[in-house]
Length: 185
Length: 440
Image (cartoon, rainbow over all chains, first blue to last red; front, side, top):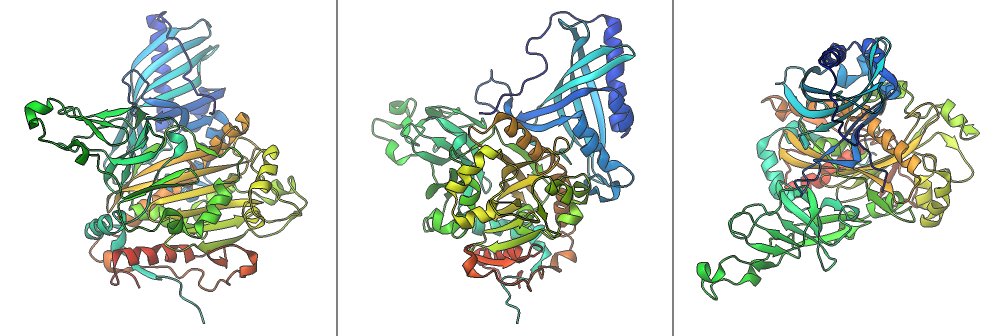
């Protein structure tokens, strides 16, 4: 069996961030979502650590209510900053977008990020940030579709603000009904 | 004189008409062998997964006696599903309505309050086993079932495709295993569309997947010169009609090599491939660029070699099975299985999984570009005028037959951009549908 994938933090910390830190992190997440929704990838990449990884495990309905509703052995998405920059975003560059059929015209994405919880970890430079995310996707003239999930982010504190270091998202829907699965949740 | 090997014209209603769809459920899905699961998903007694045959939900279970069985997921009593989870392990299935309980062999074991409700001898439990398909069989670990009592045995059904499936799935000493729970999603396209494409459409690649070429995911002369000395100008390929609607396309890397090169796998595995494959099968697998095909009606497979997937010089092969459950004429549910060789190097397995996810995975760039085409076909085929217009499958009629001395079974042609396999699919479809009006 392949090695299991895991969320950024095995244990949930009991130490909450201060209200000021909470507000600053919430603003950071809003900025990050704005960059993605407006396809401003240069800005988005500037908010992300060079070692950033983005993983979405495969959602499932297990037979035991105490088991997680995802399978940590298999991924729906497993990307790095390198792959996002050179494979996902590169397709929307001026010289390529006309051949990026699924993204021309692009699905319109809109993030709704709520229930943000900011906790301190053993490392003073790393925050455990959880949030609920709803992503709405609208393809061409179709009716919008939406997905919901729980994000678990590792966010590092740096001199000029924050950087997103890891993102792990557990989706709620098992048979995913969305215009496209190349999604930044 | 050109030999016509299958329908060259199919009316567009085939991709969007509910009446055609209703007949498919009756004539295709009630009578065909269908792929359900891989035995690695249910290795222990009691393990089960929930899948579909047509629109019926079925439980695929590894029974206590070691036999793999398939049951309609519904109580014999009043029709409530017995199993609500996608996967799990249980010795019995118990109905939540009145509590009838079945062993995982399908035998009705317990009827609650039996004397009160039915009298002492009022019900014969032996006649109330779970509903089961007529036949269940496995090939290379793949579990198939059919409702057709008169179906030919699975191996006979798969016919010449077995030889190619052995080349792909039978080359590993320790076999393949499904990696985790399959991804499931709704695709707003007819269930046949992706299967047609994967049957062997080498024609669309350079257009639909032009960005993947640009991003270095297809081997370039530069990539290949680092692997071998003689690089030739053109990729070559063969397409094969294996009978009964089953097909495969095999594309080879543009190289001249003196010994087998299974690039994309760790080199320590190559020796087992030579040992486990016949010379003809080695020829299929050595210097493979990609091979993909379809098992009629709704399963497809692909083994693909992709380059620079996690940085320059990082190349890997992966193997995927997909299956499409019919929902309506314009919607299907797709399942995605990544299969990897058991006990292979962990680092390679991660790279191979990433290669898959970034290209032929559900969020991969190949799939999102393909899906836009597949969705569009149904969208553009439902109108009153369009539905009676034909789709044309004339590609590759001129391709030369591959000499039988080459030793590849089936009706094989030398030609990488053909529609031969699409004609093979629609020939079988027309036979099962008994339809001479739509196909010509």
